[in-house]
Length: 114
Image 1 (cartoon, rainbow, N blue to C red):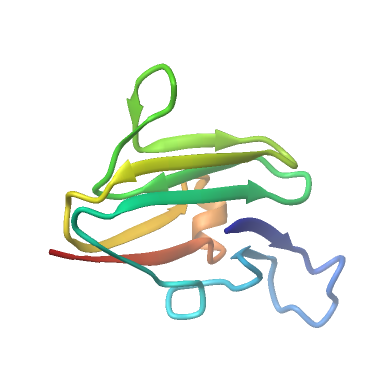
Image 2 (image 1 turned 180 degrees about the horizontal axis):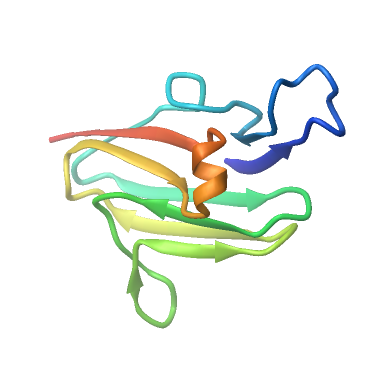
């Protein structure tokens, strides 16, 4: 999955700047990911462009090499891999924790079943 920003300066037909996952903005347009309890989950997340982003996943934590976390910073052109075993079924959000980016559409759903 990649973070991607689309700006009115670059795409004149946009009515506003958009903040996207995989080229799409806002829930029901952005990818909806699904998993089952007990599955080993791997997110590969990349930031395209010149912006910093913070990948945040509700209801889940992973070991980042230093501590358990539910958010991880990505600098421009940076990628991370997040891994954990699914153990918390529910309807969750993933989003960029930069408020302007989330409000610009950088938010999606992560659905997990028991």
